[in-house]
Image (cartoon, rainbow, N blue to C red; front, side, top):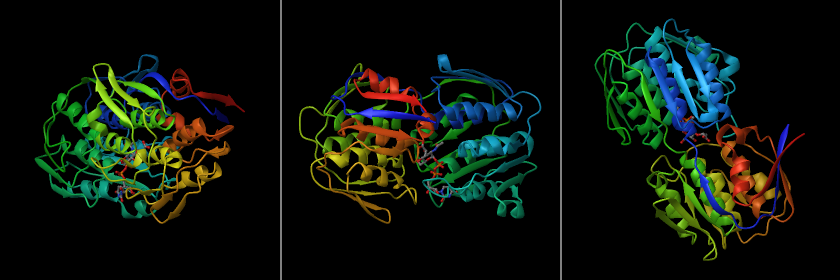
Length: 423
Ligand code: EPZ
């Protein structure tokens, strides 16, 4: 298994270009199933999850040309489409559920074996199914009790649906299903993430009639058919946030290119509270931690536009070395403190109680053997490795490869002492 070896590094300096968003490109690739015409997606990040989604779409009968060296994927779902997602692919990526709405539209059927829970939570899909049932979809309850979504429908019809929680995945699945349903669908308490807006923009370019994406109420007027599309994926705001935190906690000065600062208001505000200097320029976002001591602050994760849960562990890395104590409250996932044990192996001395973590700060961390417990936590322990004395050995880095394109190369270009070793 591959590992990262990370040594204490000089402050990060230089510039880094952010890749396309993993969490935008995955639903957009699923949306290609909604048309028989060719869809060309650009600025696609070369990630394991993208490769798995390509394999999944191929296994369903789409033709997929993956040119990740040029960050481009072409998908053409013409002709017969299978309705069963192979479990060996679904278990590699829970985002496979994103094809559910499109499969029902194309074939009137969908069979998707649900992966179990993961490190950060049980990841249920009852809200996805609540929306689809409201649109006339029948879900086999016996199969569901065995962890299999076995759904069928003659014709989807528009409906008014309230999401008990603004679930990103449920919003994306329901919006995709509603684009070609009969009549109008109103989705209330919808997720407002930028990735939802990017998906809606793609669908509208394909001929859908979606209004309100990015707000808590989305209106979708069903149309007869959708056409092919060419689209550039938005930058990955979580990758950007990760490098911003790295720049600040190492006392560096980094230019972040290909970034939509508007998608990072909460992270920018919190970094400024810690004493960072952040300035938007024509070339990108300049992030400096070299001007003032880095103070502590408190974080509470919330659905967008609140502080993003995916930035919780990278930001906690900074708080372990900030001046003074901090409190982090995780409200989105029920078990997203697995990285705390890894930070404590490095001397962070963090205490947790339920969804609340107390970080004392003011620590000089020691390098240690640590584990990437999810893809964001893997990036977070690399960040603490950059400021810890000695060597930090990070294992289970396949998690990181799922969400960060060329992570080692980008960090090394900023002066980080990190290398990937194959065991
Ligand atoms: C998306 O996951 C992202 N993944 C996650 O990013 C991200 O953390 C999450 O949204 C929240 O922003 C992709 O976009 C591929 P949710 P998703 O449905 O759609 C509960 C990363 O690191 N919930 O908004 O699965 C659920 O249990 C990944 O890139 C229900 O209770 O997230 C969780 O506690 C990690 N019932 C909360 O909502 C449901 O039916 C958020 O889940 C659905 C969700």
